[in-house]
Amino acid sequence: MNGHEYAKQQLEREHIAYQALDNGIRSCADPKRLQQICDALSAAKIDALLRKWLRRLPHPYPAADRAAGYRYQLSIWQIELSLTQVLDRPVSGRMFFEQVIRENLDLGRPKQVQLIFDRSVTRATPGPFRTRVITDGVIPSLHIDYKGTRIKQYHKEGQALRTETTINNARDFYIGKGLHNLPALRKIGFQANRRVIQVQTITQDAILAEETLQQLQRPRMVEGQRVSALRLADPTVQALWNAVLMYDLLPAGFSNSQLRTYLAQLLGQPEEHLTQGRMSYHLRRLRLHGLIQRIPKTHRYRLTDFGLRTAVFCTRAYARIFRHGIGMVLPTTSPVPNPLLRCFDKLDHEIAAWVDQVKMAA
Image (cartoon, rainbow, N blue to C red; front, side, top):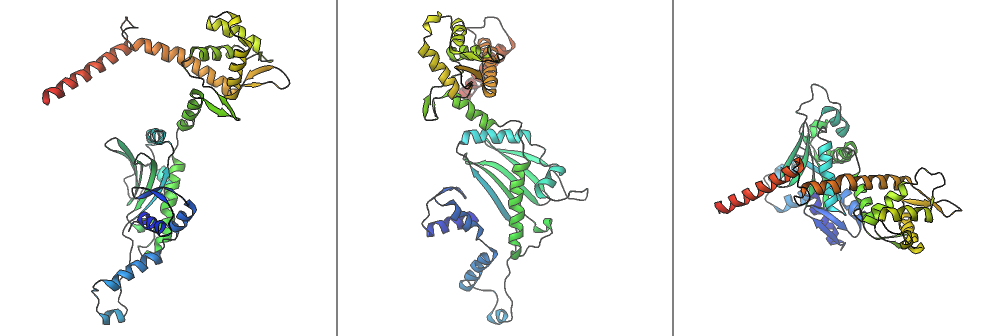
């Protein structure tokens, strides 16, 4: 019995619009009602479904046996409980999940399993305790085992992070297999799904960092005003970041005219080419992006903490990684052999050799 399909049928009966995600739901016009429908799938409703079909189908018990009280009773052979978190940026979600996998390969260890299932693990607890990463094509999935219970986490159809707990033996949790134990098993499974996410850690929040980088790289609206982009490879932006860093340690900050003098030198232009209007434009976009702030009751500015860290990182990364790195890997700009250039040449050679081999096989 598939609970997701049950939920879809109820939504259709109530004429609530939704988008399917395989055996899940991607979006719904009334998510609160959808949650109520899912919560209402009870042991009594499942038992009623069985009784309905037993009345319609040929019955192995004759009428006398049924009158004597002989009847079927449902038991839970296997139950799968899932948590599907739909992502508004699927590509970023895939990158995030792969980073989670790399940094949480110890989830299957006893001390982590104890946290996930809220169960004490001793030497007598059946194993093995392990974390497996299984790749189907290019889609990786994370698997955690506890007795006969399995937790699987994967990127579902490139659109959602799916965490699902499959309980194959209710007695692993000292619960019987009768259908009336459904509420207790649901509680265990749903809590395990949540605890997996709570236990998982990453050393940095790549999703938020990417969003911050994209906000700098693209024009956007801030406080009802349109602010132009601060593109990393733009020479004017690089000069602007280097210029404001020169004034970071000044208690009184810097003024328009002070920034203008140093910025003109970095751009190699006469100072008179940087008009008052152009400087006001640069200061405005730095301020709206949150890199600088005006000192109250003055016409002077200072770097914010975000501005300092961003300017230092972007200027150093551009000067030491991008410019230098591109120069090393391009044969036209790097006549002197270097390890990085040799690696790229070898990669190009191997790809060309493989293409030739495929052509010969065809």
